[in-house]
Length: 181
Image (cartoon, rainbow, N blue to C red; front, side, top):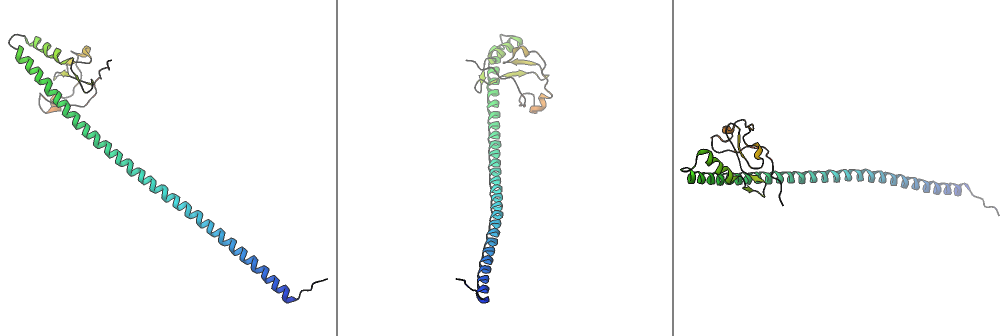
């Protein structure tokens, strides 16, 4: 049996098929557009997230650097106070030895007594020691390297360091005594 379609049925079927195809194409187009929008939004959100994390890390790093600088400055201030105190102690020892022996000893003997008293003293976990340098740069006491005593170690302006002849601090490097034990 043969089915005959009329022009209306053919037109109706064509329209239904065309409608399905149109709806399918429109849906596909919408899905593609939404996917592209989603991908762009994903990239934007990822960039914002990365920028936010970078800023957070930078801020935290800056805070840590500031904290380290603060601690360094506090440690430096504390170290200067310790050094000044240790210097005052050495001065007190030297003056006491001088006053006790000045009547019976020569100036050279007094220097040797004072140097011998200060040479073995260590502080700051055995890293600090006393040294005595004349204003012309000649080492009188170099506890860690006695072979340097009597040599002229360049000091540009020791009086200018302190503003007077008796007290001052300068920055530099010295040898660190070897650890014993």
